[in-house]
Length: 343
Image (cartoon, rainbow, N blue to C red; front, side, top):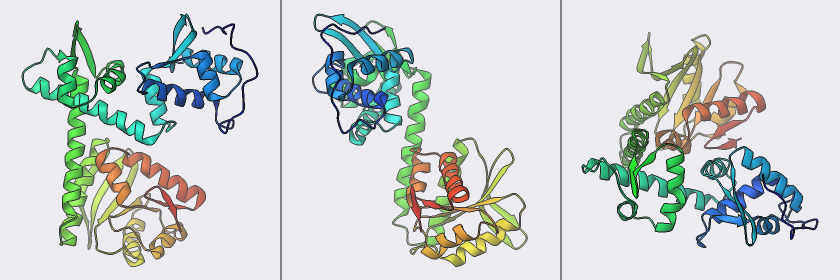
């Protein structure tokens, strides 16, 4: 447990961050220290107190709670006082909660991906026993600082291991993560490649196939080209007793209300089924208005191009996006498209 140093005292000072939860402010400060160019991933407690601008006793109490939860690590008492640092778990938590600068978080995610990809390449070259860290740094084309600031995260989450002194090896779990990442990257390449196709119907079918793969990877049941008497729907997506008809469109112009109404007639012909209308050219205001005002007829949520890219690349999941859209539509009568409420 962190004990207050004798030299720390006073009520602290006010800052513009006073309304932000103290734990969040501490995580941000320690994250920036972890990835600073200074070479030391820890902060003296007295400097942390000064940096976050809060009462010193409150900062020490918060650090103790965060140490117990595994977010912060105490580094002991040195000649200049107590030091604390963000743990690997804390670093990922800060990124996931968007407490840190977006560019810095994205840079570190990219570094970790490149390290893993380099280690898979080394493994594929026949070096299954692993490699020394300088060889991995060279293969991944990352800096020594970036490597050492991120390798402990990969080790903590079981993606790499140290089978011997100075040797690092990718684990089976790490291999699987890289294969999944490569698959998502290939899907994104395929998605971008479709943008040059002049055939709207061909684009729509290819988009349907991409989404079917990505959604199935999340554990959903997916059926393509679902036929009923006099109609055909692109996808039927299911999980347990949840069923969704999914229609994929990639036209030159925004999808109008007439397309929505035709799709709604297929959704309402089936009891207990909801609809997902996907468009890479977005939607007209009339379509958005229909989705909001015709809920009593049937529930249809709208996915735009950014939503599609999130699902295809794995930066977001179909399940999470679907839940957010349903909550907004049913609870607040808002239509979410590409992360924003549309009117």
